[in-house]
Image (cartoon, rainbow, N blue to C red; front, side):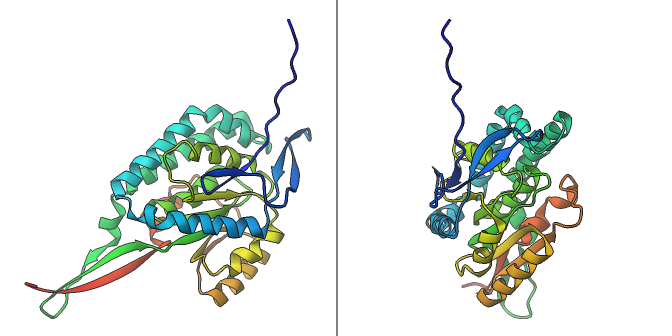
Length: 289
């Protein structure tokens, strides 16, 4: 029987529906919990971030126009893809030192969170929108609209569950996103990108980058086409993001990564998470017109 060399994987980021290695060609070595080399992770640059924003801008109008029911179908399809590769996802989570049981629990919670938001896709409008009483002969009603392109920065703890918990409320309502994955545990985002590519989600709706916080965060803060920033970051990065957001007028929703965050909690999902990343439009219409 002949022996063959194993084919080692070349991880790539998912941008605009395609897999990229980073414009710079730089990589960072990723080791498993025992310190053994596992893979070279792309070290994306500010140029990659700008390219990802362009990809999101192209995908935005089409995704926003999809029916709520169709967006729910597509998200449920993502859950199917994750379920089929749940063992592989658990191994990716365990690279950071989690036990097999902990990793399996995180993957199960992540899949359930996708199904949760698939269910919200055609329901949040009824909860968050309203018909408003007014003292005139008009119908007055408020409806929700997506903000546009949102920058998402994922924390290092719970690298898969935190990632999907930040992604899903943004895209459920029709936004597109550019994500900077965990700095120390980026591999789950690599696998998630592979599943997004086969989930019927249009290319460019979710763009996943890996790279150094120090290089990427300032550009997230100041890029004028990002309409909001969401994530969990440390105090220094929060300051950078808030100062940049004030200049370019972004909405900011940042959790404190230096404090323990229970990503498994029910409070980390639901209509209020969707509300944080949408806009409201109020219309007056004459009665009888």
